[in-house]
Figure 1 (cartoon, rainbow, N blue to C red):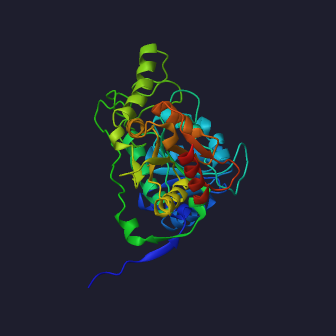
Figure 2 (figure 1 turned 90 degrees about the vertical axis):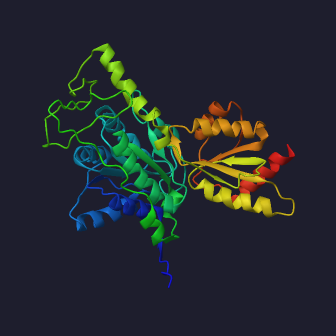
Figure 3 (figure 1 turned 60 degrees about the vertical axis):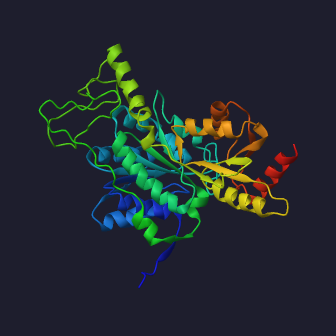
Amino acid sequence: MMKEEIYILENGNNLAGMAAIDSGVKCAGVYPLTPSSETADYLAEEMVKRGLVFKQKEDEIAAIGFTKGGAIMDRAMTITSGPGLALMSENIGDCFQKELPVVIYVVMRGGPSTGLPTRVAQGDVFYSRNPTPGDVRSIVLAPGSAIECYTETCRAFDLADRFMQPVFVLSDELIGHADVRISLDDLKNAPKNTVKRRIDLSENYRPYARAKDEPAILNPYFTGKPYHMTGLCHDYDGFPTEDPLLCQEMVDRQFEKVDAHLDKILLNKTYRMEDAEYVVICYGSVSLSAIDAIDRLRESEHPIKVGMFRPLTLWPSPEKALEELAKQFPQEQKILVAELNKGQYLREVERVMRNRPQFLGKANGRPITPSEIEAKIREMCHD
């Protein structure tokens, strides 16, 4: 007798909280901020129930500062939206410099400044690429559905421990708040806890003395040899230095540890691309409208063969995949970039594909509808 599949009705924000619990989060420092507060609410209840460390702090600066301390010991995360992400900037830079594996779950909304707190937008795409002064190599994931808020948050924890740096999950208000039917089997079977943080208890332990393509090894405090941590440029033992060769080496390694292992980071999805004559490039909740529009266009009285390319990893940029897409669609009028801003990812597509695709964008807090994508594609057909 086949086992009956069980479903729940849940939103992306709560599913991100579930993912954190299932991924073994031990510490969360949070300052609630619309439209991400549901994740904080979920973790407040579930982490306290399990005897884990959850603290609501006085502001976003204190929240990530608290989370940094937790990340030294075990898996840790914070939760915010655009204005809170801006306030976290200095501490985010400190996490990169010290190589602290913090997961930062961001639910995007309209801006600039406090903008449109209860509306949907994708305004943090540029900012998440360089969320702090200096040179950093961000890892930024962009779930496109409620279930991906779960799977990408699980992936974020593994990537943070693998590369020993902050990892961002860029959700948005629509998938954060919309309740959808989720299979419990999908949650159970999602990859998680695939990476175990490395520890080095040897006598010659030096946390930052690593190969040029490998991250630091930071032993949890009170285990093994002591070491130093600083936000300044540092040597192999973590002590400040201004040695030019060593400073360059440390920054280069932070880039190389990511760039040498892109196969462990990059993830893209496509929809109906096998015979596509037009392509929509999008991410996040816009992909839900794109799928609906593509189905309508293909099944209409005068069908148009449209497909979708969707990066789940926004940064590092999926350059090779975009280059291949440029070969498949050499004509600019065959490519549509759709996003909820004034063209933040469009600029990356233009840079890599070396053309100027068509663009459909909104920055007014309202979603891009399937009808708007359908109308834009039909317009492109007649140009």
